Length: 117
Length: 110
Image (cartoon, rainbow over all chains, first blue to last red; front, side, top):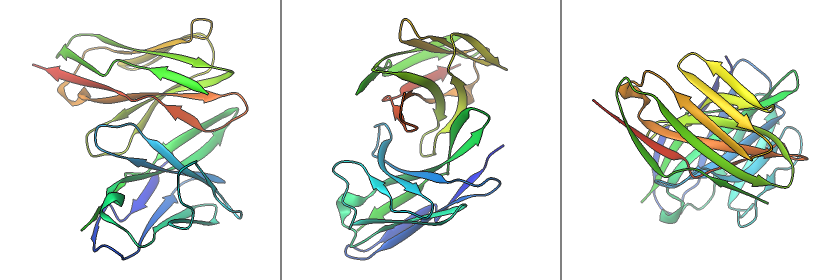
């Protein structure tokens, strides 16, 4: 089956620093990847859609200068949280879209738990 | 836009059967996903329905009625490890991005 990896799985950083999270599709190519954020006991909130070779599309209310997304290849997308603050502490999950026949299915990475002190 | 409704929490007994419902309102339907998410982990894909009817996959089955804007996930022979949140997600026609419901927290007890 389709496998998506995410690194790191857990990160603790000081306020004001930047954190980069990598999302890789291991056994398929993904033109489109998605970045989600999930706060405790809440559903997934889409932050942005990452398209290989072009600029990401951000959801309303998500600061593109704070959450930098780069999708440089068909198997890798990165999310950089710049100048992180405690309110950015959350569970960040990426997904990669695999097209099989007429179906586009998202497969999720294992998530990255970010804690900003 | 679209509204997706699921029960917040359900409990069931090990070995039993449980049905988790999802209702949605959308301007144009193009598919419905079910995902399982254990606490502290990312969601894992369970099923995808785009046509009416029942899709069976082992202990899990998913049903869709497009005319009623309704789906359910059926879990048979419940195991303790099935305790998790179950997310219903709908794709709107013209978009490839699913919108997730809040999820149903299922608690399986002995």
